[in-house]
Length: 397
Image (cartoon, rainbow, N blue to C red; front, side, top):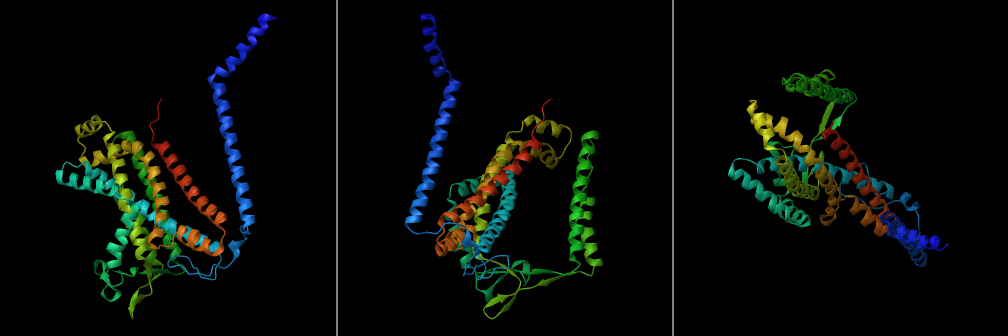
């Protein structure tokens, strides 16, 4: 009996001293505290909103917004609902962030490669570009580009003609561009272009597979250009050129017709591109340096040109180190686009979380919808790039 009693405390002590049990206990406690905090927050929010007689729910999304939006590709009118305003903000944000991501990634690759250039001057210029932009606040850069550059452009009558085209002008009102007006049969041209892209991808994959099997490089440049450009142009001509252009014309004190981009959008886009391209350049540089020098020397010993060494040997291996941090960079571009509110660009935060919130008073619902959008976009970017990242990783036997 005494022996049994002496073992019992030992069993309890063994459980207490077991790291696995302690870990489970701590997790249960933390999870319980989290659930309690969430329920307390919800309860306090409901009490405070009831005290102030604030309505709760999403019925307000059906109400008329009653305000105009400075720029949107959608057919929006002030009489449209708050839900339409939500979509206007989403589309504007996605356009701004999408273009900025593409340009920042491309510019980052260029600057990152230039930082490793054997030309001392080029390498130093690229280095200063990275250091200055990375160590300057993004908000300050946005304000600089807006007030220091685009707001000081000439008036419409003294507009800057880009590349000498009268229909492509830049002034302090924005960038004016011809607006395409597709006709009935234009969809055939679009179909030919999409089909050409698919054929080009198939051709390049087959050429890559053939090169891996035989070691012989097969150029697909000419057939790719033919199926992507020549084929759609032929379809476009055979269908009677079913595309017209709405050209901006100077009438009075401003341009009328065509499409235009706000100076605020241009300023935010330039700031997002140059700021994040500096970070992308460092990712590219680090990825290239992670590739063993033996790979470069082996490729050079086979007689490959420097351009082929970079494109076929170094970059494919460097991508394994570049893609993971690039996921975070792309998400940061989307989230940092919300700083456009500082200079009045009508993104989601500006038109929905500011103007719509002030008019409707539904702060909780609006903030939750904005958070849901940014979270969805971030998770989508992360999921897509993670799939690509897994495909390019080394497969060990």
